[in-house]
Length: 355
Image (cartoon, rainbow, N blue to C red; front, top):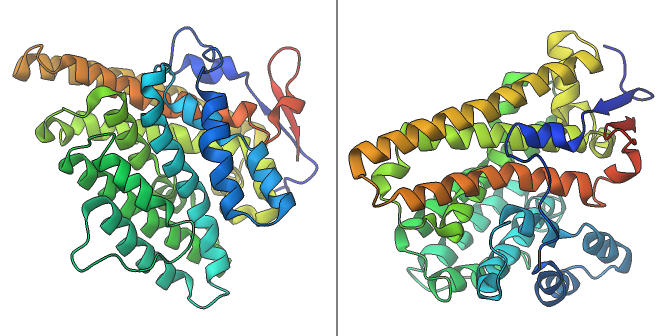
């Protein structure tokens, strides 16, 4: 396979990505709570956690509030702030936590122990402690204590929803360890193997759970949440989320080696060039968006048949929240300085990215 260095990655306009998931295919207007979340929540947390000025400035410039707001484009009033504050604290944790796996492995505990202790701590913060709260395995993990307190308190989450969030986060942390082991081994990864662990490390299961409840779908019966339609909607969201991230982060991630990003893995497996691989994956992305809508339609019909209209509003809020996970990560990937995409956007909207 031809090395990617020196090639040019050409991606369709953001509207092409959006068209598969929403109508009209455009980003929402600036979120009215963005600045407040940045100044009152996210930047103070980052300042308390990151002592090095250059690293802190870089983290601030990533604009984490843009992702929070993108995930909840309809929660725009002052009364929604407490929900978004919880999401912001949680999101800072989920973004920083897996970075700490690498640093902890060279410290007093290894990566496997760090994940084990983190899981015990996160579970206790969300569901309660049986024998008193232990010391957090890292300062980053201490953020989850406030998240748990807020979910039980000001956000009034039901126990069942906190259990479901924990179950999703447990998989996220387990698969982050798998991904860490893959990176450390330096071995080849197949496209099939990539999808197995990457749909866990994306955190999308937790994103969907957080989005559903915060967006107004918290009253859905557990039976409905276990239906095949709901599970399969999450699968379509997860694959789309991961692909957006892999495409727009390719330039940034190449320095970590080809085993960490889907694009070179898919090129190798298919014995195909960069342009053909991107086209094939974009065809998959369009299909996942279409299939999501088909599954959502089947979910509505099944709910109407078995429950009538009594929970339909919560179903719609759930569908809306799931869609926003894809469009939110797209908006963040295109507009955040984290990936620097705006400098590669042509007049026709295409992205021309030198690798």
